[in-house]
Length: 151
Figure 1 (cartoon, rainbow, N blue to C red):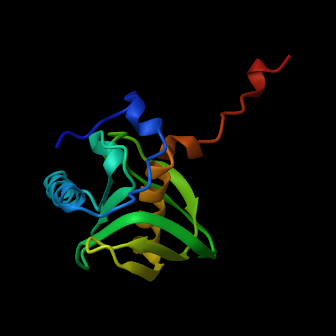
Figure 2 (figure 1 turned 30 degrees about the vertical axis):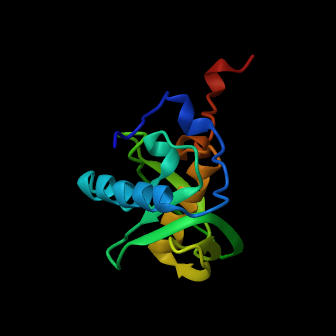
C-alpha cells in the first residue's frame, strides 16, 4: 500500500462507517498493518492509504490493535507532545491531547469492544481518529502572530 501525503485530498475526507465486517475489511487491516510496520509507524488510518473507511491499526510495541469505527467516548486530562505523521513527512507538531481515553470500536470479527487507553496508546488512537475525521496534525498549528505586520 502507498502512503498518501499532503496535499492529497483523500486525507481531508471524513471516512465512512463500516456497516458489515467482511473479508475485504480484514484484508485491508492486514495490509495496513504491514505498511505501518514497513514505514516504522505506530498507527495508520485507512484514509492514509486512500481508503475511505473507518479502519485503523495501532501498535506502540504492545501488540497490534485493529480498530473499526472507533469512537472516543471519554477523555481525561491533557498534555501536549510533539507528534509526527506518515502523511506529513518531516513535520513535528506539538499537539494537546487527552492523557486517558475510552474508545469503543468493532474488532475484525465484528464484535463490539471497549478499551481504556492511557499515555502513548491514547495519543496514537486519538491521532488515528483525527485522520478518520479528515483532520491532520498541521490543523493544531497556531497561526503565527507577528507584530511587524500589524497596522
